[in-house]
Amino acid sequence: MLKAFENGADGVMVVGCLEGDCHYLSGNIRAKARVKRVAGIVDKIGLGAGRIHMYNLSAGEGSKFAAYANEFVERIREMGPSPINVARLKEA
Image (cartoon, rainbow, N blue to C red; front, side, top):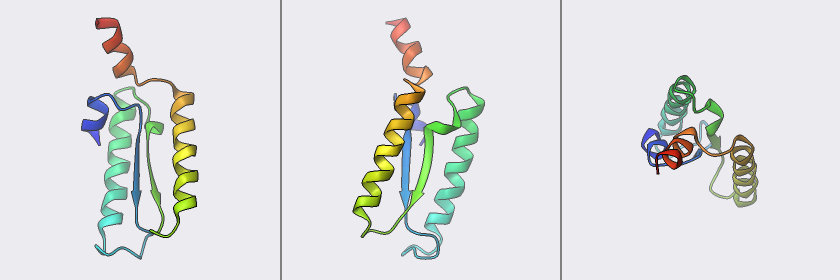
């Protein structure tokens, strides 16, 4: 997730199984903890914790996935480009 920001992502959307319904048993719980940890890091370095978010849904919820994706994209648009990208443009 941090590498995505380092490589220029304006936001990172993580999608996992519904809690309590993961083939990998606790994979989604571990992912949630990682997303929370990364959100704290990106907030501390000035990118804003809102640039990363985790959604939980089942494989059969395509329309819900689309709604979440649209919601996330709109949030990132409102936040504007990542400060990392802004700094890169100034250097170029």
